[in-house]
Length: 400
Image 1: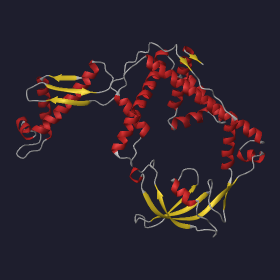
Image 2 (image 1 turned 180 degrees about the horizontal axis):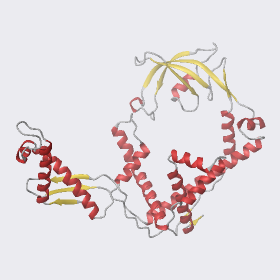
Image 3 (image 1 turned 90 degrees about the horizontal axis):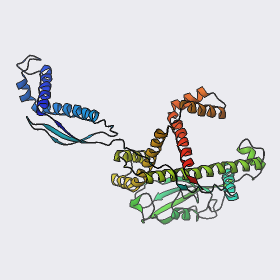
Image 4 (image 1 turned 135 degrees about the horizontal axis):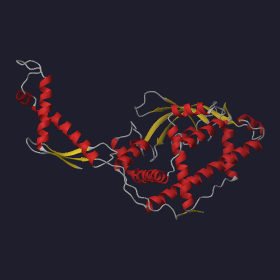
């Protein structure tokens, strides 16, 4: 937006600012508040003009926004200021406004819902994880470590960069250490049957987070302090009783299958929702304000302290296209809710709070207070609104 302020208005503000300076100034030879304006202009010309300029631009910006009935969603960036004595003041201000979204087509799409299948292998994998979580680590008296063992080691860098060995504890085979380290640990032994300490040359992989060490080699002294093996409980009714309110393994298995089916259903529904919004956005193209995408990226990436600025900028550039699509989906969803009157009502929010209270054997008042304290009332309102929007969209298209 280009703004012009007449020279007469500029001069009036300069004189007003000079009088304010004069009322506050203390100069030798003059009483406070009695300094002539011409003296003020001569002594404080630069500061006077800057203050007058700031006031003029801010007030003109505010009036221009109001007169054009604009709704900025980003801070105005003042550019190309022309400020000369006895001349009109001209400047430009750039800012983002809420996009105008016209959604002419909201249905008639064909969307495929992926099958929400849960097979026995999935159930078995979860039961095995439960079994591992309820196992007990037992200190091994002898033997070499294998995948699944919990090891404690000391590593000393022999390149002069580490004066003292460092302690590490992790489970082998989980990817917590680089492959060469894990392979070296498996050659050592506790209990005196073999060496518990040795020197190794290890090579750092190309996908190491620390780019400076990718592909480099280093000599280390590795000491195996201890290894622990996991004693697993039997897969029977006693495990089910240990896990929770289950009497038999069959009850636990049924609950695991039920939870997996719910998760699979949620994932399938999420695919449908994303596809529907993608179709809506494609059928009703609109521009996304850059500031909205920037704020979305800030939310996703946060403010990592240890990441170089160039790497952070590279990451932002890589995910920006997807961030822009995500913002478009959010804006389209909000626009549909507004246009179709699908925003969650207070009664619907209260009903949801009551459901949460019933499920947790407490009162709605306590749940509401807890949600309000955690700032999650808005989250529930949005979840309810989104459900109503997606129910509406699904009714307008074919879901197969």
